[in-house]
Amino acid sequence: MLPEALPVGFALVAVTAASAALARRSLAPPSILLVLVGLALGFVPGVPRIELRPELVLSLLLPPLLYSSGVGMSWRGFKQNLQPILSLAVGCVIFTACATAAVIHALLGVPWAVGFVLGAVVSPPDAVAPMAIARRFAVPSRILTVLEGEGLVNDATALILFSFAVAAVAEGGRFSLSAAAGEFAAVVVGEIAWGLFIAWGALSLRRMAKEPQIEMVLALLTPFAAFWVPEALGGSGVLATVTAGLFVSWNGPRFISPATRLQGFFVWGLVNYLIEGVIFLLMGLQAVVIIDHLDLDEWKRLALAAALVSASIIVVRFVWVFTATYLPRLVWPPLQRRSSPTPWRHVFVVGFTGIRGVVPLAAALSIPLMVNDAPFPDRGMLLLVTFAVILVTLVGQGLTFEWLIKTLGLVDVGRREAADAKRQEVAARIAGIDAALAQLESLEGAGASPAAVEAIKRRHGDRRAYFVAACKDLESGEVGGAYTALQLRFLEAERAGIAALYAKGALDDEARRRIERELDLDDSRIRHAAASGASRLV
Image (cartoon, rainbow, N blue to C red; front, side, top):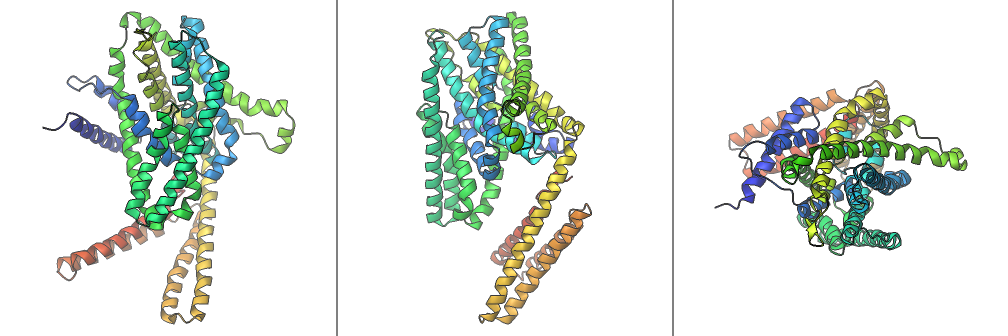
């Protein structure tokens, strides 16, 4: 007899894959479609209630996503945009939590402490959902960097605020700002230090292992080692995990072997794909679970609370983003001379992209049922409002995102940036080949086989000619697609020839697998070289 969780897990993964395939055909954002599919499935008779366990999300599913996002993020871009990232990830989160508490207290009479619980829950935009949508379109790279950096850091701020707010409810609304500030600073410093230690230790062990399989196991364990210890000590674990990822992003090229990087590209791609898909599906399935916690006799109050908070967090984000961007330049004139102002269209997009996701939902579900031997005040309302905020921002803002960036004219800006980045990439490839050819000249004079040197020269010379042609294609608006298609057709013909030899018995299985692996690597290399940057060019 199979444990009950296994068929449920199988069904979640199967529905995720089917929904993703449907999203590809319909061109709908997969994240939004998965939430809507989960929402619909939850009300189908016979479908079991699947209640999202907060500890499952926060301790098992979130760490790999945070870590891989940190590894994939540009440390240089993160450092260059540190001021706007911290402004959003700390300042905007605190401002949103306070504004939400004020709105819900003033208009519905909810106690301040309970209002701060709700504010902390709904304050952080998601680390996954906005990027899952934004990366599909030609958005200027700085906007992507700021949004991704915010999503990596703001969960830590919100979860720490959440713990303070729940403690304040338990203590009858009493709250010490100085004690909370000191604890917040200690958590931040401690998690950053722990993340650096874990990342340095993991890279050192991977360097000593010198075995791709062992290195991949260590890589998969790293985010959990970074997350679990601070979480167990009362922190969030988010900052430590993000710090570990950023450290690996900066230092990985010196420690990680090419074979491991190649395997990691596919392993982490699959891990992230499955986790993200299952998370969005589970989010939709929580609607029916949340309804079970509601007192439907108060539906007017519940609907009003959901509408007020959903509207307020959108407005508050715009207020904060525009104020934090332009007010310092008005107050302090040296800033005006130091740099040019950020275009208002860029600021508007950042303000618009405050999409909430799984962390607010997990935090809301983790609100205790009882506090001081009494039911937690307004817990059902907090759950409903959180889910409403997620739906309004993820579905409403997510579906209008493409229209917005096209209306603001940012698609053309993003395409120009992508084309410039592609030109730089191709120029760097040419420079690398020139350095290799120069090294071959010295090898030829050092007694290396002239025939071998000449063969390598021809191969790299052909590659250089291709990239030179690609530069010209880019100048004329092409991306080298015709040449890429020709290379792939050549590989397919070679595969067919190898398959024919194997069918005749002229090739054994071991040799066939080696050749296939080399052809697969060539196929991956050709597609990757053609696709890098091209998705934002089209």
